[in-house]
Length: 260
Image (tube, rainbow, N blue to C red; front, side, top):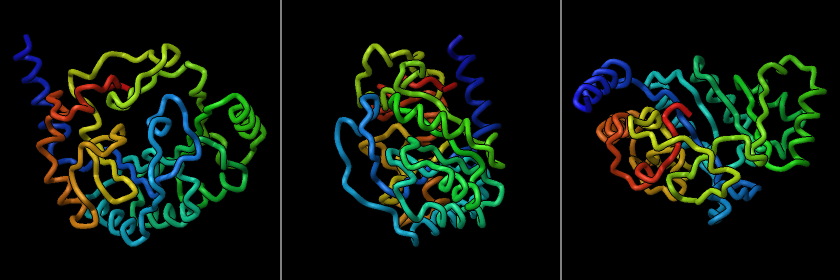
């Protein structure tokens, strides 16, 4: 039975994943988050302040174009994107090059207002997702969205995280979730979708997964190599992740289901 399942996974990989560009790319342009939520690794260990240079950002975006990328593009890893004041201009450049990409901004909402909403959409984003991490902030954002009557209302989404209604990640085993948040499905033993994605931290390093807080699974440095080189050179490890053959501890200890 396991043999048949493995054959099916191999066939699925060969026809739907192999030699394809990433389904999603996350580019972290700055390192800072202004929050320290108990269900996030930022609450365990703070990161040094830093930001990706514009030159490196442009190199990555152009490299994604060379790779014919047209999937989901985000600007977060363990940061709050809106802290980077360059964000609208960076989005503008990304949109001018990756015309078919779906650009999503995910924010904790603390810096969101009607002006910033307009700035983001005028820059070229496809949607805005806001997460609520305490009652006061969530109430403010929900009121803002409710009263917002602009053209982009149907492209703004909100979700409360702090109230225990969401299934939470243990971030590759980096944190131990309290009972309030430990409502996850089982480990993705059948293969993980993150093997099809590319995560780039503010230093320009590609890590194996968006859950990799400590950059344990390094697969490339965009300051030294092109996006195409890093993507192609990491094909073996990404294949193993897609098939459920985990070699990194963060993969072995992760409890985020494939379907999440």
